[in-house]
Length: 188
Image (cartoon, rainbow, N blue to C red; front, side):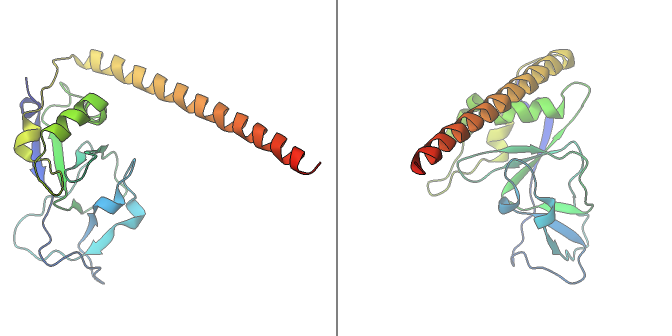
């Protein structure tokens, strides 16, 4: 089974003359610089898209996937604070066909996992810059799991993330203690 059995994938919008701030905007634009672990909604540029065609804006539950560069990071759009937001052509917009069969949160976890990232990079084209195409992403092997199994995996993911966070806090505290000792020695 492949990813295309469960989702539709579209490319982001092409801005032929660049992305320029507009005093009377109709839309906001997500660019590569606006995405790290999540979307920096405050940073989006306001633009005016003049067209007679329907502009496909991003919706809650969709996944925005970076298509260019070494990391093909996936970000879940969950309750976006803004309306009329579009993404540039540097992204792929993934929409789950049936959320009762595939949880968007599980799909995001799967896409960001290390083995899948290796697969995505190995199946991306481009000699200068790695680019993931809709066609290649559509072919990504995808497991058959019930939503209950997906939820159990997501619970495990959250548990591991909490554990990692706790360990990182403990490490930072121990490092601070070592620095305090070194600082005390410096003043003697």
